[in-house]
Amino acid sequence: MKHDPFGNLTDWGPVLDIVAELAEKGDLSGCQPGLIRILRHKGNWRLREEVLKHIGQIQNPSNELLRQVLAILDDDNLYYDARILAGSALVQLMRHVRTDEEAAITGQARKVIAKLVSTPQPPFFNRALKDLSVAVGCTAPA
Image (cartoon, rainbow, N blue to C red):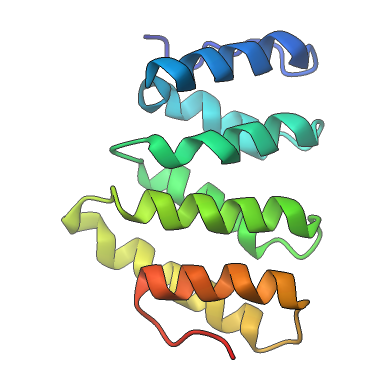
């Protein structure tokens, strides 16, 4: 399996097909560098959303993938739907984090949650933060 089979992200139709095919086969784990590249790509919201919808199934997420998903959640310049999808993906990914890496990503997630709940957020975003808070074992926002 190639680490990045996605090719040119501006030609997003085939990329969506590849993501769907890999997700269906359960092969997304072997393509984490490519998935990270898609998540970093600012040029297409649809690609980012599709990846966020599917990456929760990855059994051994890399630290870099976890950090990128957390960065999306923390990005005040992104629209809330993408940030909510990132929170949901993190909840799923946290179930598959190896024990030796869990403390680091949990600590980072707690810092992001604390920062986000320290400022007013829309109720629908607070719900996503509450779900993530439970997953990382910190006090949930009110």
